[in-house]
Length: 307
Image (cartoon, rainbow, N blue to C red; front, side, top):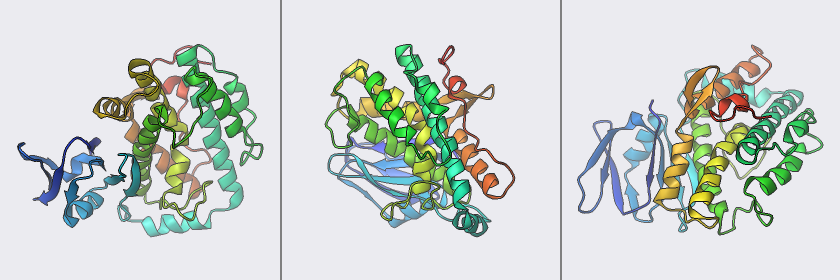
């Protein structure tokens, strides 16, 4: 599978399938064809996007995620493949039967990695980790003291250098940029989860009867900083109220499809998320104790000297 992310937001289009290829038809423009297997995520943003059922089933069969958007061009729905692994039933059974102490220990690992990632991002963007490295050491099993929230308050205050900034999904400012980036990251994580034979609705921490993707919500947490750093760059270039247009979307997509240094190698974020999902399978099977979460001081190529 390849790692192509398609965002159809600029003009009306019709999608269909021909000989295992995705066909894109737009008014007064040449027809575009690409293998379904090349598509990782398709985001349908324009209100006049139409597609055949063969597109949805073909993308699912190829292991891709389909994201649909509302009138404001923000993602509101996602379709993921559910039959991509030959031992899926066995692995889902392990998910269902996982004991609470293990879930709490795994969540501790995720939260620590998230706070370390935020500390590294702050070190790069501001020259200080804001005390988050020390906070990460305070996270206990299950994070009963909610250190994650304490770190977030400090993180958001420092990251954008705006005393008035608040993380608000409905705010008409850089929050729109974050919303879009997180939705794409969520689709990427969901794709990795399904490819590993896990069910995206059985989370290790998040539990929401109205969400089908709680495991993706769990595992994506440490990687939100990839979107955050792109949003900082966008705010510096186009302003704090930058529009969610083709330029800002292109920068977000470039960030999540970029390559990052991990274990001395350059890896795509898709690969890193796949490795994380596979490590969860191994933990559930008793083959290892720790999730394969990156050390973010080496994950970012420009993070030398981060705390």
